[in-house]
Length: 367
Ligand code: 13P
Ligand code: SF4
View 1 (cartoon, protein in one colour):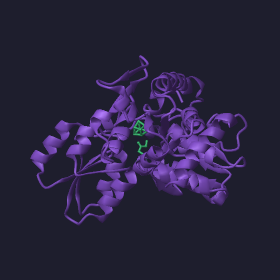
View 2 (cartoon, protein in one colour):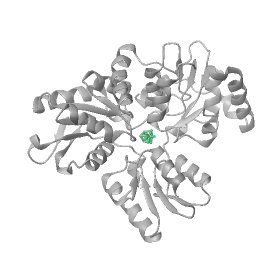
View 3 (spheres, helix red, strand yellow):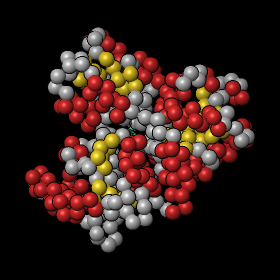
């Protein structure tokens, strides 16, 4: 969803929630959870604040949260602590009797906003003119429901950072080349790790509708949409050099939304769950620099006092939109679950949802 549009339509949180003490807010969450029991489900992404995560019924990376949404047919109210595209995915994968709420409608994702349907349709038309029916579209789940729907209706699938390799392999079993939306870095990192040379990857520029590639276009195997995550782009080669210099024994682990150069220079790269597992399994006394969102890095620092953990970027990198979901917004959304005219409901248009579900189900089947 376009963040500006959501700002215009968003009903703001009443002042009283901002005046409540932390204790009052926490007591209210516990009260509502006890009252509603299994009628309420609160999923939380790993990047959410601790004040929110403490009340999540389940935490996970994007894949796990999508799987949980598909499995949970019981909860009437799903209060999604994450960003807009994740709540849309939950709505698409749940039943008609379940309602998904996003505690703050301004919790969008700048990467998802980098590909809109008009741009994608124009790109597709031009790419079909060059390559004919040889391309399969894949979209990172960090995209709008409309993009997922486009991809689903053209035979493609969604991917997450934890199954991107599997899904890219799957795509190449269907067609000769792929269009990967909207994160060029995840697309490039995944394809390169599968052995596809960088000089067989082109970039689609959605601002001026052009294919950026020097050479013979028939050699292109992967077309990367020119989008990125503004949080993970803050981890730089200089950060890696500085860390190696200051802490020669430290291992560097990053999310694949980081640029290729950063991933190549790191020791390990993977989804948020992969990073958490690696730190959990690491020996006591080991040292780690992590290149991902700061709420997760801070939580890992707190949970592993026996390990030396720092952020790869010493200035830390918060995801401002993830951070919009805080305790006051969680309480406000719990208090208003049954309000008529509730403006925090995420409901994807049925036609869009149908094709988007095809793309999501192709992924879930292969994960
Ligand atoms: P994962 O949890 O799938 O690694 O996703 C990271 C992310 O950027 C979510 O917005
Ligand atoms: Fe979007 Fe990046 Fe924030 Fe994830 S971390 S929600 S990709 S802006």
